[in-house]
Image (cartoon, rainbow, N blue to C red):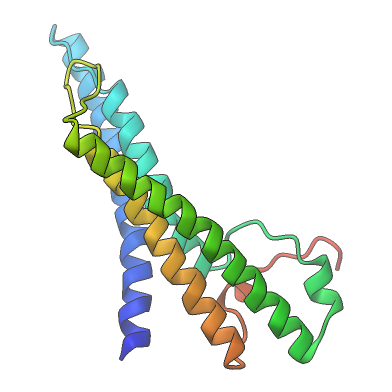
Length: 169
């Protein structure tokens, strides 16, 4: 049950990342069409916010599908329990570092909300909105990293190993 929920969460974050990429294209198309019709549509700022949201929402899905770049020379040299411990340690260390970033990203979004900080562009978008997307993406990555560490410690093959591409083979 929880496995299905987590996998759906990771897949949903991937779809959300893809949606933000589509929204970038829509924003740029609106700017081009608007310019040709004599309207000023400033989509540069919002496209940047969409790109940040897309990047951060893609992190968990990309990690779980094995598409992140990993240096696996040491991991491939180890076998059995030693390799499993190394994989789990790497996931937990990454979860700790990402958790630290997520904590401060949440704090930044909260501070922007509290001070009513807005972007300087024509649209004057409250900064907490794109910062919340960044924080949510980081939290999802922490969940994925801890999920993977637990799975590896329980003896499962890392899900990200299915996407490995080895240049040394």
